[in-house]
Image (cartoon, rainbow, N blue to C red):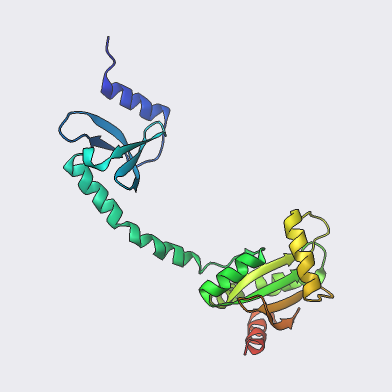
Amino acid sequence: MKPNATFLIAAAALMFPIAMEARTWKEAGSDRTLQGEYSKTEGENVVITKLNGSTIKIPLAKLSEEDQKFIAEKSAAKPEQPKAEAADKNVFKWETDLVVAKKRAKEENKKILADFTGSDWCGWCIRLKKEVFDTPEFQEYAKKNLIMLELDYPKQKALPSELKEQNDKLAQEFQVQGFPTVLLMNSRGKEVGRTGYQEGGPEKYIEHLKELLK
């Protein structure tokens, strides 16, 4: 007995409960159909993710007019994506790679704040992070003006070898003698200001940084 096509599609959906915007694709000029979600367009082909998670390429010209119209609408919506990427830049985060920090600083026209810290043993470093860097007031300022770079020298945890090598090299290059040392750099990685722990909370620290950046 020949299996019922509708039954097979339903069974596949139960076996592979993938959250997808599945639709029925029709071949132009025939009754053949395919269940799946639009993934992307590659040249003259459409990539469709089937219910079982596998993908298939179908020439756009072989799809029905309705399907081709659907693809055109999906493609027209693609330019909206950079807006989401731009919004992600306004999120407070710590970089650990100087190369990445310099790239972001150049693209976003910001200065780099490099925190040379002993995160798991240095009392003044821990206080600076708690009293300033972890506060909403400072993070709001930093999102708009700074790229945050943590250069850590821990005693209790091990860093990846390439990260430890980078941090040791930078400590020597900038002649860091103690922790915390906070450097302000331009997008080329050149020092434009230097400070450390300051009492007074985030508001006072922000004003202090503004003076250094004048």
